[in-house]
Structure formats: structure tokens, C-alpha cells
Amino acid sequence: ISLRQVDALAFGRGPGAFTGVRIGVGVAQGVAFGADLPVLPISTLAALVQATDAGQVLAAIDARMDEVYWGQYRRDQGGLMRLQGEECVAAPETTPVVQGEGWLGAGSGWGAYGDSLRARHAGQVGEVAVEALPHAAAVSRLAVAAFAAGEAVSAEQALPVYLRDKVTWKKIR
Image (cartoon, rainbow, N blue to C red; front, side, top):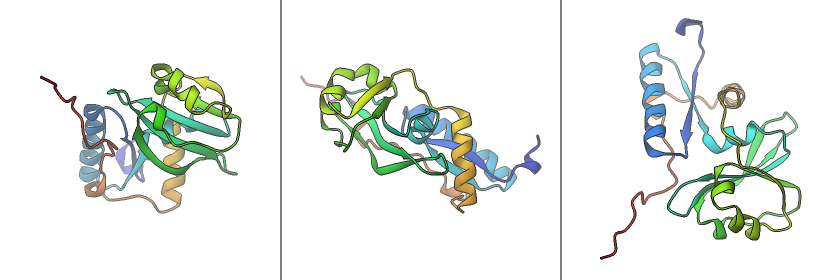
């Protein structure tokens, strides 16, 4: 496939590791700008949950510093996962509480902070998929829907989403 055959470029906009997110955004911006293509910023959390078969998922990616990148998603009639509320970065014991039962816990945050997350969401979470990862196929599926909905932006508007303002440990002397 050549760039002339491409309608738009999709990329993982974060949240995630600073360097990885910056590289992804930079490559998408550079290629899109050079080829005069629009871009589709796709949430890493959305890609993570889209790759599951579950109907409702609590996504938690280990954000280090005793926090997780968090999002609550439900699958719509078309099979796409839709964010419920907002993505955030939070300590596991302060993640937003959900209603109902049968949620799947997915992502590395459930491995790193599983005890705290299970205690916080006791009664809501059934299974946990610690090994769940965002996949390119999920990014693609979400991007096709976003493109059809007119959500593409120019390369200049392709921005990373970090969710965290503070990115260093505070040294105590």
C-alpha cells in the first residue's frame, strides 16, 4: 500500500509512557504533514479495551508512581467501546467507582495494583485480564469509526494526551 492510497493516519495519542507517546505523535505528525493527510488520535485506553470481547471494561494501565491511567468503557450496538465519563490518572484506591456488576478489569494496572483495585471495585469486577494490551487492529477499528464520524484532525492538531501534569518523584532530603 502506498501513502496515496491512504485516507488518514491513526496513532495512539496516550495516555502512556512519555517517550513512547511522543514518538508515536511525532511520527504520525511527520508522515501526515508530508503526505497532506488528516490524523485520528486514538486513546491507548480505548485501544486496550476494544481488543477485549467484554461488554464493559475497567481499563487500568500502570502509570508508575503508584497510579494508574483509568477509563471506564461500554460496548455500543456497533461493537465499539465507548468511554463512560472521563479518562484520568489516579491512585488505585481513588479510581472512580462504577455501577453494576460484571465489569472486566483489563490492563497492566490490574497486575501492578490488583489488590487495591479489587478492593475499590469489589462486587463490580468479575474477571481480570492483566495481559490485555492495546493492539494496532483495535486502533484501526476505532480509527475507521472516528474517520466516518468526521473526527479527523490536521497533523498540526495531533497532540499527545498524558493525563499527568507531574512526571517526577519528589525528592525528600
